[in-house]
Image (cartoon, rainbow, N blue to C red; front, top):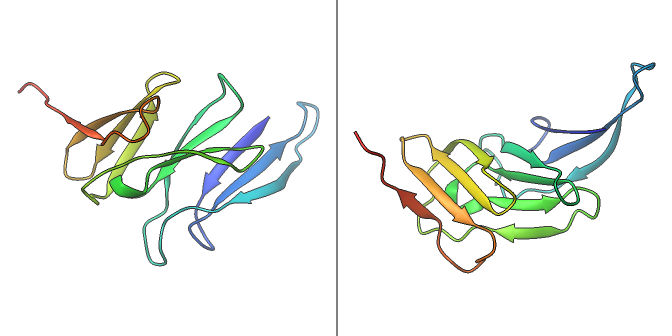
Length: 125
């Protein structure tokens, strides 16, 4: 199994290999670079393994990406006019992302349309 974490010493993502159940060994496999600048908050992360293992990551709305874990290839970058800080993000399915901004705005993105802007969702009160 693979495990992805974010945090110190920088804003990169760390990929770990978790050994079989009869062992407590966790070893570092690789590091994935992120678009977060120095001093930015740690990336929020979500994973999807329906295809090759993917990690959705970003700390701001205009820096959301999907990276294929094994190849380290960037497979999607969200287009956004805003740079709001994210409080969370998730895969709704293998093509749709939900992005939650710290100020309460919810946004949807469809990765099948990479050039389309991330759209805000109206939430009924």
